[in-house]
Image 1 (cartoon, rainbow, N blue to C red):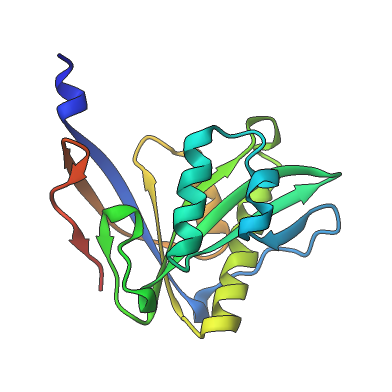
Image 2 (spheres, rainbow, N blue to C red; image 1 turned 90 degrees about the vertical axis):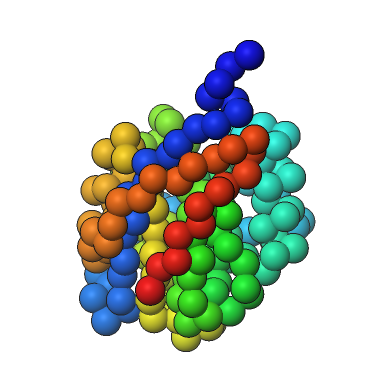
Length: 180
């Protein structure tokens, strides 16, 4: 039996952005960004597996906000945001306040990485959430090993907040972290 399946640890780096420190990405005419809705899930997920479809539908049911980037008719990436006012716990790892948001579950097609799509999607999502919900405090996390995503985060103004070990036993998080 594989012990990692029973118990494992994720090392996550958390970043914080106050809207007043937000650095909007340069407008792009080559990329369109749209809100993910139940009727657009299949289009967004053509390049992802069946489990992701279930995840997306759950996030829509939980009133999370998702966006996707599209260029030349092809989906190039997506990311999601949990709003604290929905009383949900993003990815079951962190607890956020009512006036905060946690950006998570982002992906960019491998062949499209390095083209600035990540910072552009983050920028558009932050502008949308601020405009619609008046949330001014955003968190985002990445796996410690994912150095490339750090560049996207700093380009829109995120600053390091902390590093956390998340422990998972039998598929359940056993130490949720409260962010202030």
